[in-house]
Amino acid sequence: MPRFEQQYEEWLLNHVNNESNPRRRELLDKGLGHGTIEFLRSVWFPAVGNLDYLFPEWEVRDFNNGYRYLDLAYTPGGVKGGIEIQGYGPHARDLDVRRFKDLCRRHCLLALDGWTFLPIAYPSIVEEPKQCQQLVLAFIGKFIATDVPSTLTWLEAETLRYARRLLRPFTPMELMAHLKVTGRHARRILHELVEKQLLDIVSGQKRIRTYQIRL
Image (cartoon, rainbow, N blue to C red; front, top):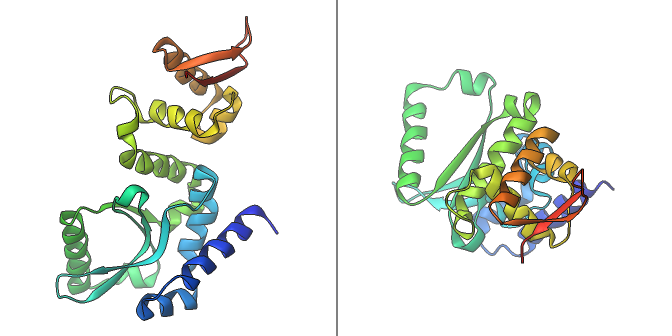
């Protein structure tokens, strides 16, 4: 079984087995929507490498004291990150004024309650997955930016966090694949972080081969 499918099945089963809320448990038992699964398969998992801190069909209270559900909640350290997959079929094209206003009001109230949203259009998942992956990395960086210097760009910050997670030397090619940028861009980022004394060169003289976090 491919790595994503195995982790996805284990992740979803874990949420089902540990859910005591009957409303959310019923939704999880039905399985996630096609758009959410494709987002996880084609965007989130390739960019992040795991499904940690993601909660599917996350329940929130609405302004009428009812319940609504986010496609995915991202909650490292108790932060509030919401991800919603926006379809574009007849349902979306024919959205009436009342429902459109309700959708906007919902997003406004959740934002006022401290949620940061990442709306992703389903056509973008299919047609522009690499751009969506970069958005995901920037989205994650919003929540864990405090552990890196505020002067860094988000790509530099994610490089630093990537180096910390690995705890081993890594190559420009590995960083290129992780950030979804060109090799030249990856080397430029690494050079800047070496200049800022945040990364060390591990091997290579005329041509640098590997880098690691400065300890």
